[in-house]
Length: 321
Image (cartoon, rainbow, N blue to C red; front, side, top):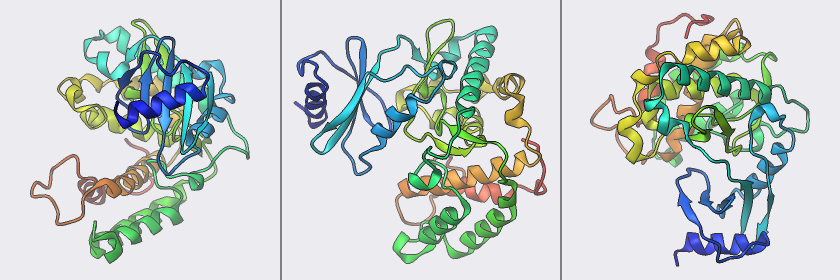
């Protein structure tokens, strides 16, 4: 028995289920995830214990329109935590998108936008904030600059050089005033199509609230637009050949048609640009230290996103995408 399966068996027992229940491992970035008969089991045994409990609590705040499946239970079993969810039948939307016709794609995009709009409508001072976790986007500005300083320091093993760090800091300070008090609510935090289930006709569920917190709603939009540009970066390796940017060209337009307020901030362009930079800074923690890769166009190296953002000559304050 593998260590991950042993952990799943312990979690099942803690949840009051048979530890011998049939389980099927499924791919997940953040947690060990298993499919069972009528349930999904997620297990977290790493240092950020508490995030599954937070997800369970946030799920109780969501309206039905957010299309979250709900929670059957959660708890601790020694050094690990577990979350039990109802199993919703369907396939990851990213896996079937290539085969959908235009009408199906538009329906899926609009239903996803509607679900996220419902989530964004949830707000309150008791919601977790950016500062309470380490989500893909490094926010707010002081945390972004601290991350930048760490990446440029000897302790960060020179992930980026001091010159690039200085340019990024100036870029961030110029655009940060775009992040005023408008457009704040409960965000999903990672709503790409690997976290959306499709039942053949409709969006059946919006999954994985690992990074959900109170933040600027464009956090979710930036992730989705990045997915449209380079979907192969968000899927498992065996699915990359079907994750084609050409299939997603109409996706942003459908999102805007369904959820125009998501695109309405007068400095939307600055918000999206800086959010892309902040996410690249967060991703640099996963890049091995050392010299820049031989191929400067390597889409998997966040440093290339940073230099591309700095080379973008769009004037600050523009709303274009």
